[in-house]
Amino acid sequence: MLRTTKALMLVTDVGFVVYFTVTGLGVIPAEWAFADYANPLMADWNWSFLWIDLLASATGLTSLWLLRGGGRRGEPLMLVSLVLTMASGLMAIAFWTLRGDFSLAWWIPNLYLLLFPVPAVVGLVTAARWPALMNARVPSPPAGAGAPEGSP
Image (cartoon, rainbow, N blue to C red):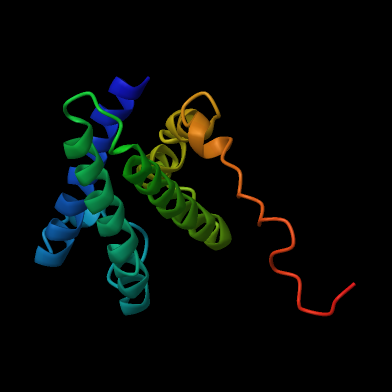
């Protein structure tokens, strides 16, 4: 599962950067654009995803770099990236639902963003993957410590 997730993350994270580069250059063909693409309010909505998508890309690509040798140091960043990616997809799906716009051309990629991370997120947060984190206990204060003087 992790191998598939890494491949999908690489494609997705590079895809986020390519999408905003192409959008910024204004070279998306009109037939590929979402409804009301030329509306300034819709353009602003689209650009509002820039920071969450680029943060997902930055954390995702960094996690892949850290994981390249088979270690686990990149797993926390991978989790952050996958959750940001899911949030981005969910925000877009929620918006299109509220607008009543059910274009498969935009629903399919956003459902992909929402759903492809789910198995890896579940795997990363289970006790089997991070037992030390999941079983960590906050140390108890020494006996008598922390009680104000004169308290019963």
